[in-house]
Picture 1: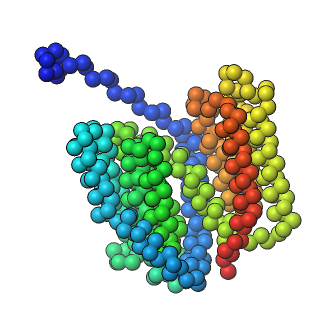
Picture 2 (picture 1 turned 90 degrees about the vertical axis):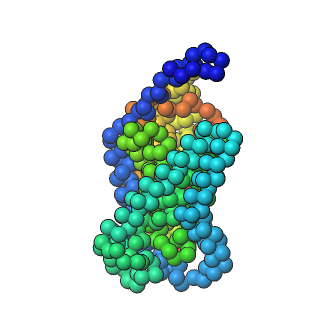
Picture 3 (picture 1 turned 180 degrees about the horizontal axis):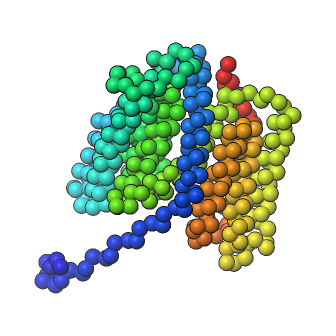
Length: 359
């Protein structure tokens, strides 16, 4: 027991917090399938997207891309962590010191993992890719290290840790990380699949260092479940943006079905019999959100996106059923915003279809 300065015994430290609940295994498996399926979709259109970018002059974005590359550089990220560490020592903020140390550790681990994967996979950089073939093979040569994106993975890992020091501005480091990842694509340094792969890896490593290391398995599982919807959103966005409508009649039916699913999901949220003071039926609450998500997926008209959306809905249902207390209490404002966002997503999907079609 430590003694305080006035001779009295210092109070004993509080017991460690209990470990977070492990996500149900089916939800983790389904989320993993969503991520892998999204990668399959991205890899299918990576090279056509590369050819599309090469056919356009993006020199006006070059300066922004250069800034993104400098921000995602290892030296810049280490400098940010060291500055936070020094500030924490000067201001005697233990939370800042711990965050800075964790961000440095996360950066080191993700760099080790990424560089190992780069040379084990050996995917050529876009500048060395000249055909539609799959050229993946272990290699130590420079330029055969495209997957995953090192800048993206390192930036997302550091941003994931730093976000906990900015509870009200946690979106800022993630927005900067998104800028870094996007710049890697338009500069021609990486394929979209490389950037999304780096994002997933960085988020999982950063999440591990946001909790005790002995809970790394649970932290990784939670991170995978949380990142799966974002990965599907990115893959679906790229797919819709690059594919024309082939059958207008079928597309109209799918869009109408998507709108109907969103409206039914919203109606299920606001029906009085589902909104008692106790919070409503778990089945109704989860089903309504699944319908909102399904509506957007169906409206895309892409079989792979629709199938992955179904798997994601099953994963979210499994998580909610496992943790009944995790289901938010009904809120007219929040539920209305969810429904409006879903309906806006359906409309946006319709306008984005084939906007930059691949040849």
